[in-house]
Each structure stands twice: as C-alpha cells, then as structure tokens.
Image (cartoon, rainbow, N blue to C red; front, side, top):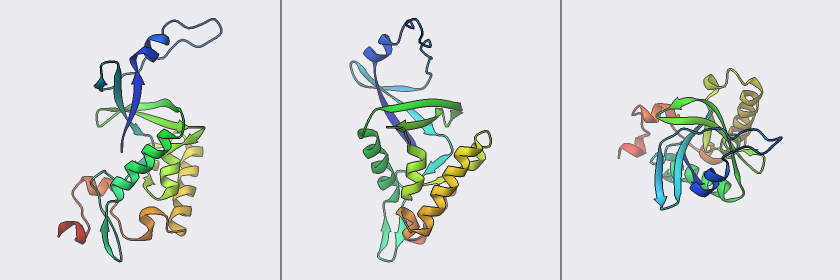
Length: 171
C-alpha cells in the first residue's frame, strides 16, 4: 500500500549537522511530490504488510464494499494520531523505499493487519522473525474475530494486483 508521509523541507534542513552525542542524519532517497512550496510527500511501502489496494473491493452478504479505501482511511487515521517514525529496512519496491512505519510506538503494518485491512507478507520478513510472528498473530486474531475484510470474501492484494477479481467486482 502506498503510504504518503509529509516531510517539511525546513525539518530536513534542520537535520543537517549532528549535535555532539547524536547520530548524524541519515539520507533518505525516494521519489517525492511537491504538495506546496515547502512541503513534499515521499511514498514508502510497508515492510511485511500488504494492504488492500485503494480501488480494491471486498464482499459481504449485502454486496461489494471499498475495502481498499477503508485500508487507506485506517492508515490516514493512524498517521494523524501522532508523529510518524520511519525506519528504512529494505531496497526499493515498486519504485518506493521499504520501511517500518510506527506512530506513538505502534507499528502501522501490524495495526492494519490486526484491523483486517492488510495481510502479512512474511516472505519479506525472513530477516525479522519476531515481527513476522507478531504479524501472523495479528492476522489470525483479525481472521478469528472477523475484523475488516475478514467479515466476508476478499482477494489477496498480490493476486488482485495481477488481475484476479471477486464476482461482484466484474459486474
């Protein structure tokens, strides 16, 4: 899932030289977009969490609903709840840096999985078995309690990106 994090250019400039006793600022590389004259957005992909795509639909007994939009809304709500911490953990995926993003100490990927708006992508977590275990536990809990998309039918986001669709999406 594409997650835009706002970065103020003034804040980037303030990260210049490291103060004594502090780590030097780490360079961040990613494709940016200008939101206004002094604010940019850089997209990151969550490491190990694959959320429903923005245009993806899921199905419950009453029909299809926009689970991808609900996943995006959940991410936006979590980002608004505090300051985001971004830890780069991998190389580019779909042209975007791969990161673990947390807000108020809470891993957004894990939270999306727990809410039923993402699935674990454990093949990308082989080097982090603790996080892989937490993600799988969150997934099983969401599935058991029918949270989010687990209340009905859905297509795995990876398969959806390859063109697989629910019957109600083809109508």
